[in-house]
Length: 324
Ligand SMILES: Cc1cc2nc3c(=O)[nH]c(=O)nc-3n(C[C@H](O)[C@H](O)[C@H](O)COP(=O)(O)OP(=O)(O)OC[C@H]3O[C@@H](n4cnc5c(N)ncnc54)[C@H](O)[C@@H]3O)c2cc1C
Image 1 (cartoon, rainbow, N blue to C red):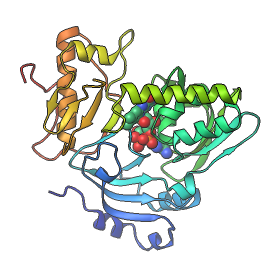
Image 2 (cartoon, rainbow, N blue to C red):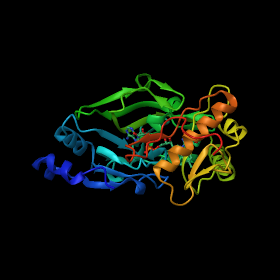
Image 3 (cartoon, rainbow, N blue to C red):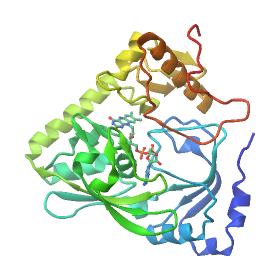
Image 4 (tube, rainbow, N blue to C red):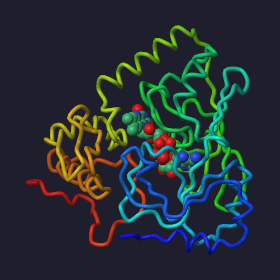
């Protein structure tokens, strides 16, 4: 059952849309965008050609229309009822570039894959970016999530980020203005990051190469990276590893519908075939309940859950049964 009407929303935007250079897709299937390959439709997806095109679109968009920005969907669980309003997904042509921007500095477009930044840093003997080699997201997602791994994180490397706000105003935020904490930035969800500048330090290329190889080897050994997954499902609570708590609560391999807590890395949720957004979220909430009952710790989702439920298929926090 379709919960959104993209053609109607598109028609309501008026003649101005014909001037846009980016792509507008009504009722865009989000299972083609997310790594989980699950979830409903985006009412209207806009892929701007460049920043000017994005600004022009935002100036046309009435304030009351909800706006969501996505990267490459490696940290997203989209609910089956789909996403009301507009989803902005930056185009690789306009926002995918990566270049040197001064001494040990790199500028990357927001849809540039993290691993391209790691590769550019390695090619130029710039240290501090090997951790990006193993994170499958885009720079926009990394800046929003303070993505990190292997002892590195985005907050430690970011100098500044160019942003466009909901009204189409362009500005630049410094690292200090990003309000960073573990896997979190406190800046408004309505900001769209378009590019970012990062600072590294001089380092021997062979050392960087070795660190990147170690990152790859580690991932291939302990994470289900070839599965349909969203990476770490829950944040590590202070002083604990989420995977250990999940394991101790007996949830390794736990399955609901087509969704499973990976047997290889039990903080990774995987779509083993035809999982719905409902299966994935219900599984996650069941794990939260079991971990709470076992350890008294409330796990916090790291994966972003967006969109609406199908009527009658709502997932409530801690809804799973311990005996399931
Ligand atoms: C196999 C696997 C391994 C992973 N390993 C790690 C890891 O080691 N460390 C780690 O931190 N993460 C990891 N992740 C999670 C994920 O890759 C990161 O969170 C990544 O930074 C998300 O980027 P994305 O482009 O996929 O963003 P999406 O998943 O598309 O979006 C994530 C959030 O970022 C926001 N966002 C995306 N682009 C923009 C933009 N241009 N402007 C404003 N907001 C934006 C979205 O609104 C959303 O809130 C892993 C995921 C997988 C599938």
